[in-house]
Length: 76
Image (cartoon, rainbow, N blue to C red; front, side, top):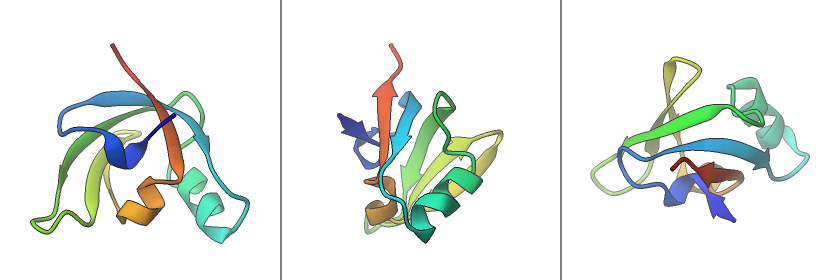
């Protein structure tokens, strides 16, 4: 399964699941990373971390470790 951190800049996908049952997983869901939600990769900081995405009409920055917890299905 592809994870959010593996999306290339400009690539879009749909959220399939968020891994885990801890506070970080809950926070990711609260930020709009829910099943079926479209998400687009916008870019990364110069050293590759954090990553920037567009979800629910706003920009979201996530650490790579957080983005690895979000399973996605790339859009065609």
